Each structure stands twice: as structure tokens, then as C-alpha cells.
Length: 213
Picture 1 (cartoon, rainbow, N blue to C red):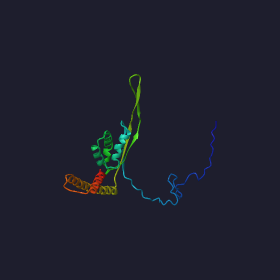
Picture 2: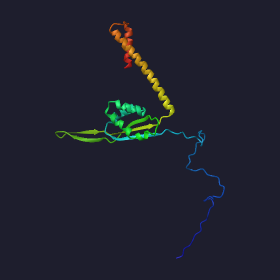
Picture 3: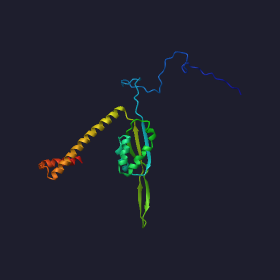
Picture 4: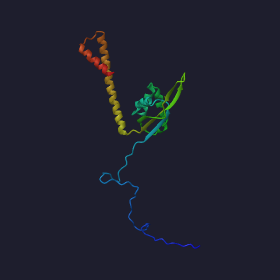
């Protein structure tokens, strides 16, 4: 048995000579910018603030009840949210309070961290048959849900804006409390007959006091 060799024709276009000064070709993996889009290749990349995400799974509570507490802390800073959890009298509060242990070590590296998102998703709903007397039974549903909390680092502009809003809220509340204290004292004086006012003034004061509550 004899072996024969076959010569294949060599085309210079298949391989590139490294020594030759060939013009570089753009990589096909690089995205091509649209013409007239106004973007340059040397565009600076905007650094996004670092985020931390924690997920609590298999929470044996109704998603509606957990979502009520999650909506309460949504948008707050972590310190304010933890204080709010300690004073809120709800059973789902203890469940929402557990997310701080999930990523507490990661939060130490961030400067200021507000809770950007806090939402609840459904999981597997267990259906259990509860047997009663005389051959009767009832299907009980035990819901499960999951809680997702996303926290990101606060920028300097957002920190200044939040501080300004706090000052405005403090002045607004202090003005409201001073006005409420004055009206309460005035109503007491009117009640004991020390001060006499017209019936129209009484109606205006009652309307204002009702609007405060």
C-alpha cells in the first residue's frame, strides 16, 4: 500500500504576514456607534454608586402584610429604617428587620446607604387539607413570600438634598406644633369662659384642628 501526498495551493490572503505594515482592522466584537448619534468613542464612563442586595426567602407570612412594612421603609436611610422597625407594632416588622443581618458586613464599607428598593414577591403557596368531623374537610392555604432589599451608596448631592429636606420638615413641624399649642390653649380659655369669640371664629378653629389630624 503506497501513500500519496497531495499538494494544496497556498493563498497569501489566508494568512497575514506579521512583518508587513498592514493596516489594522476593527474588531467585529466591538459595537459600532450609530452615525449621528452624538456619541464619541472616547466618551467618559460614568461611575455608578455601589449597591448591595439582600434577599430573604421562604417567609411564612402573607405577602400583603410584609409589603405593608416594606413600603414603610422604602426610600429611608438604613439608620432611620431600623429605628422605624423598632417602634412599629406589626408582626411582619420582625421579618423585615432580619434583612440587616444579611449584608451588615457589606454595609460597613459604604458611607451613607438609603434603601432604594424594598419589594415583596410570592413563592410557593402550600395547600393543606384540614379534616373535620362527619367526613368534611377544608383546604387551608399557607402563603410564602420573599423580601428583596436593595441598598446603594448615597452621593454628595443627594446627601445635601436630604439634609435640606430634613431642615424644612423640622421647621414645618415646629410651626405646626406651635400653632396647635396656641389653638389648644385658646380653646381651653374659650371653654372656661375666659375669652369670648364669635361663633364664626369657633367654626374656623374647629376646621383647622380637624385638618391637623
